[in-house]
Length: 164
Image 1 (cartoon, one colour):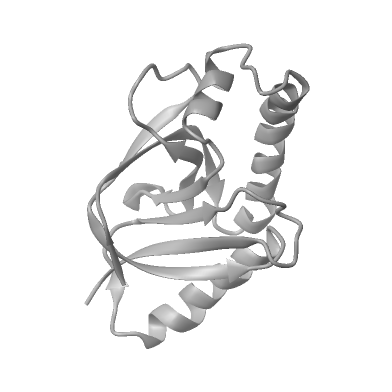
Image 2 (spheres, rainbow, N blue to C red):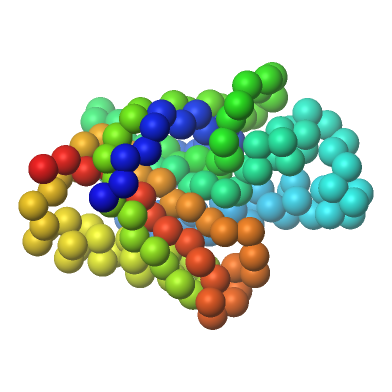
């Protein structure tokens, strides 16, 4: 368990259905990166607009965030995000404040999206039901390292807010 202080995240947000999330969220990542990152790479990572500037300045893509809203189940919001330290919020992006919480952190090693999806399934089907913990807030955070996501030794993690 790790205590993490409040964190502000900025990114692209979309609503997903629990039943199709494992299929549709990777498509959302592909869409964001094909539309935005390919242009940034082509231009030598020199931003051509406010959104590309925000992607670079906030390391958009370091986090994936699942946000459940009680009245929307079985749907939830998902953000492709980075740390937000202030500044303008471009149209099409949102900011989300993660409260100061205790987190269980589960490391995943292997290519995406399979490695993170397997850990996620294990957490909610095996670990959580058999632990002394419950979910402290209706969110969880995926962390992604900055390396080759197709590599067999790629590192990522899932953070689950917990309480006894």
